[in-house]
Image 1 (cartoon, helix red, strand yellow):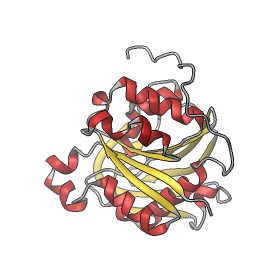
Image 2 (image 1 turned 90 degrees about the horizontal axis):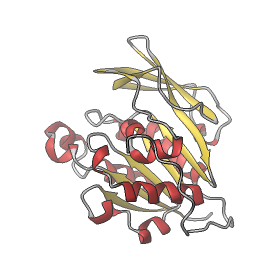
Image 3 (image 1 turned 180 degrees about the vertical axis):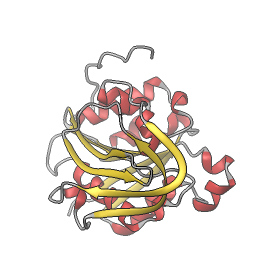
Image 4 (image 1 turned 90 degrees about the vertical axis):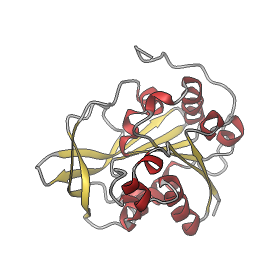
Length: 244
């Protein structure tokens, strides 16, 4: 089986400023995800963070990445437009992208979906989330049962301002009664994009075995097809979102 080259990107800010988050993820959310994937294989996993030069996403790093995992929350505006554009271009050329939790508000996600994606209901009460699997035959749902229960999470609720997904794999239900499209697949150019909702930083979501199973499955789904030609040159830019 082909080794999939994965880069896990994280702002790495909450872990440095919030003792609760630092206790859950002492080496950062990015290293928690990378450590899991490294143990599962066949993955070659690296990490990158916001405060590194070029946010750790140099041309060399992006050119050697089959699937990029993106976690962002408090510093979307600090991501340089040039870097967001380069990530967008790589997805159009064939790189897979997995956007987690509050990454829905990132420049990269908005560029690829063509609209602002921050509008949704939310409530941080640490309530139960049940993620229902609605497409059991989808590769991202491989090995899962009917649902995933997360004991405590931040609530996200509809209306979620995104284009209709090409495939909807998961829907979440919360104790307050809200529902949310929590596992959304898109195809952009030659690349695949998966948005997965769970992952608020103050809860140990990335220590949950079924959540990590989904991320592993999503990496395999999003990776370029073995033997497919992928161009690493520049592509024609998409028209920018108003206000950028």
